[in-house]
Image (tube, rainbow over all chains, first blue to last red; front, side, top):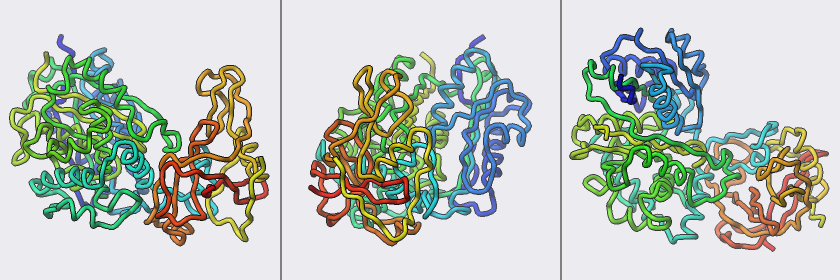
Length: 390
Length: 141
């Protein structure tokens, strides 16, 4: 029996604004759509994976949601590495499927971030006056750093070491916006130029407002099973060719190197599993919480050498029609970012590999690489997916 | 070394929840002394303080710092939603590379935020946030 792990179903809930859905309903709607897309019965699901963390007032951890969904699982995983959780889930599920710990697993995510919390995530303030802060964050809390500030410190150091410019970072946002303009559901669809990015207000130097991702509602789900079982299912099987992850720190003050990421360790493992090289990759899905996130992923995953990312991006290599089209759904920068975007990287990669990308379809898309960044470029998960298995 | 310890009328920012390791760190800071840790076994130095050496897992010892370092990277925060930080915008958050080696997070004050640069030499001072808590800040030398 061929137990090679394959993704056979994907589903999105509603985005970018869905005031009638709470976070749990986003999980559920995405799950219903992924199950329908896979063409399976719910009763076939014997593995369940969910990072929780949808925010707001809801309870959406793995065991609560397994109960809510009534999944009779023999494999459960609640790994939470921030926005990259879902790439780590692919890694864990690939092993679980291969080892027979389960046969068909469901991964879900849901968040009503925008409708319930507004746009406070990036700059709203984690800390409040007089609050006692426990754990390692106690060494950071008194200073009023923001989420944007943590990424900004990466961009500042990268600029210092390599001469990377705000214009080059802006090119990333512009390229992704061009894909968002092809996605009718994307949050931001107006044409945008490098000057628009540079002229948007500074949030935390050197990151402007348009270097930062959207805040939206949204949910996603996917179904993964064995190649054997997938033979009877309607969608093209998308193979998990390689998946790996790594962590350099969690809190940003413990980042050992502000110009790179744990992707430098994870990517060679994932490529080794896949038996592929960077030139085999047809499109990229990077966690674009901020423009700098993409640049550091591009370099640390080895697509270009450290410091070469800025000029490479400015040449248009990540745009539509470029060498490695990036974030064909419009990304977190322009389409949707409900707080933990990593699941959408997997879903869009699968859509492209199936050839269901519509106007934004990457021609002859055989191999896609999804790279999630959780925390503050802390936990990097890499998944390489393909239309065929070598 | 003992650095300046400033007092404020009322500390309105978050306070650390003291634990088994951090109590001594914050107490020393309230007296004007910046502590990191050094491992007696392998020599590794680390910040923030922990119950083990992250290099070799031995019990670390306290090491009093010179209180000098340079800015490794920084940002100027220009938007923040919650008080009291909202009322202090813009302000500088930085990673400071200590003379002793490790990096420490802090805020840089006593300078125009637009004049801050990577590589700038800075020295520590403290603000007394509670009887047993001093918060390290940094200013240009």
